[in-house]
Every structure is written in C-alpha cells, then in structure tokens.
Length: 285
Image 1 (cartoon, rainbow, N blue to C red):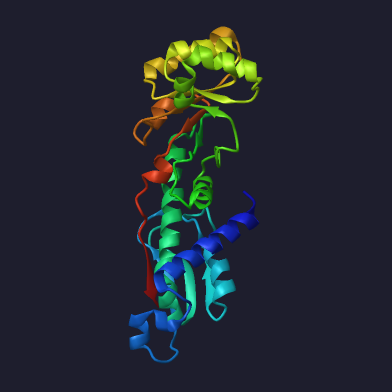
Image 2 (cartoon, rainbow, N blue to C red; image 1 turned 60 degrees about the horizontal axis):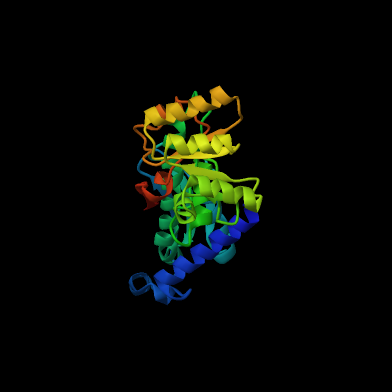
C-alpha cells in the first residue's frame, strides 16, 4: 500500500463520512451550532485520550483538514505508531468553533476506530516478544474500510497478509471440500501446475499429505496445541523448509502459548473485528 494511495483513500472516506453526517459542506447543515453561533468565534481545542493507546490516523486528519478546511489550524504532537499515555494532547485544532464542531464527530470517529485497531493489535504483538512468530491480519475487515484497517494493524505491529483475493493463492477448507478432499486437491494442484500457494489443513493426516507433496506454507486451522506440536514435528523429521501458520481460536490469553510452539505465523481476525473503541474526546482549551 503506497502512502499516496492510503492518503487519498483516507481523504475519500473522511469526506464520505462527513457528507453522511452533515449532508453538504455548509455551516447551516449543523442545525445546533448554526442556531447558537451566528458569527465567527475563534477557539482552541484539543483531541485528548482518556486511556493509553497507540495512535493511528493523525496523519490523515492533518492532511484532510489542511486540504478541505484551510482556515483551521491543525497541529499534531504525535505520529502514527506512537505510544501515547492517558491524558495526552494528541491533536490541536484552532479556528472558527463553528467549523470545528462541524468536523468534531467525523474526525473523532476516524481517529478512535483506527487507534482502537492499532492499540489492540499491539497488545497481541507484545505477547509475541521473545519469539520468532509474526502476527498476520486477515480479510475479516469492515466493508469499505479494509485498506485503512490493514494500515492500522501494520501501525500496531502486525504484518499485512492478503489485501484481497488477488494477492496470493490460499487454498481453504471450502475449496478442498468442493474438490473432494485433500488428496484430490493436491492432484489438481499438480495438474494445474500451481507453484506458489498456501494451503489450509484441519488434521494431522492432511498436513502429512501436504508435506509429502512439498507444500511450503501450511495453515493449521483450529487445531489443538497437541495437534500443532505433532504437525511441527514433521518439519524436523523431514528436514523440509515449511512455513507453519496457526489460525482459529487465537486470543490474548492463549497467543503466547501458540507462539512458544515455534510456529512462523499466527493470523487472527480479532485485531480487526473484535476491537473495543479507545476513548478520545475533543476539549475546549
């Protein structure tokens, strides 16, 4: 994901959400503020966090405000990926309070959502400290927000896996079931001359057949610790260079246990679809 592409996508999403909130870019669209403040009133405000977090999205907000609302002054004290202690002044926004209140909820929603993902992802990554296991994200993202959510997992310390179906061949359980089982699937792979791929296995026997076929990247799906150990032993027995990835049922309580087994990757959708929003608010200063 190139920075320019992400910036453009973020600006588009911010514009889209703002339009959803106010309809059109006009102070009269904010009925409450327009009723209370008839004239320009300059104020200084600050986005502050009510809990520790890994900030994500500030670069997008600064660019968006600068390009779309140049009369406002937007300054950031941190950059994406910084650990920020509770009660910090994240972003300062100064200018006509009518425009600030106009933007408040859209900017907060954006900053909170991305920071929630980066913060939660980082909690998983910290559990992997001292191991060689790498955390991967998944395609289980919010519709329309995949690029930004995967950016947030990367900011939190994870490695982006597939952005879409076009990135990599991943043969999953439903592919295998439709074909008629792992043996027929491996035969079809050979017939189609598919070289680079990842394949999902649910049992030790499936893993064994895949290794005999010289599969290089095997996804161990929803396996117990005992089953995973048994599968990993095949790497040592055969001397083959196999990448093992664990997925399914991974959470903050057990991820360290999985990583200690010596798996290469752990993938989880928890970091994108099970996050709790971090608490950030806008204060007048």
